Image (cartoon, rainbow, N blue to C red; front, side, top):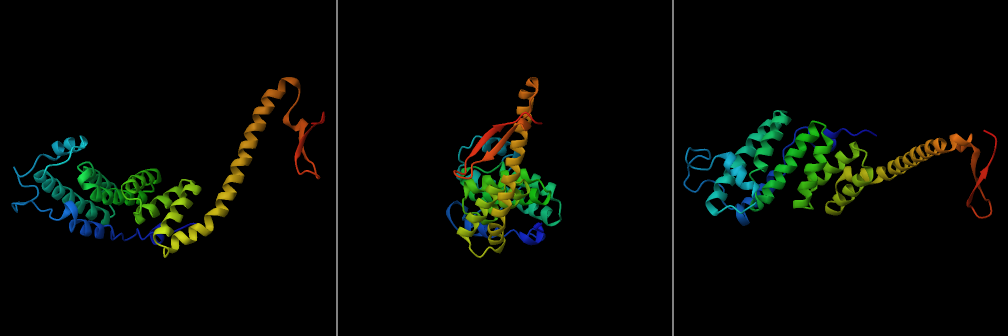
Length: 248
């Protein structure tokens, strides 16, 4: 049964529940205060490094010093807010570009925020039906936070669309371990095993077909084909014997 991704995963009018993670993060650890300490605007001239310079610094993965961390955190949250606005306006490509800009500024000190940004960018990719990119971003989120429910659900759905059914099933099972109330995951865990069995049977038939084609190439110079060989089951043992026949 085909899913309506918007209703199933609440993406049509995404409210970004991940915002709650930001609020919690801002109350603890390195995220207690994120406005510039002198009260000047985030992008005030002379108040911070050029964004490209900060991005280049972030690529080194060295930790920000305290002043830099305040400035960069403020910049990232400002860009994220703009990205959210673009998402709500259904400008998913523009939103993804802005999330990318913010992600590139994040170092280890901002990993909680980086996970949220990656999850939001994954939502953009999902809206644009870019399932491989969705899977990639969600996997990056899960590396940072293995219990990130939205990322697991989005990756599971993307994997279904990519016919990676076994991996999708694993994700849905993990979702239920975290939150057994997730009805979409429960439905998928009931549905996918049957689909996986059909998929595996189809793959087996395709594999046998390719082997027969290869066998026919090898046997053709001898005037034979795979049709000259039959698999006959032994009723006593249940095993199979190969029998040769001259008839084609």
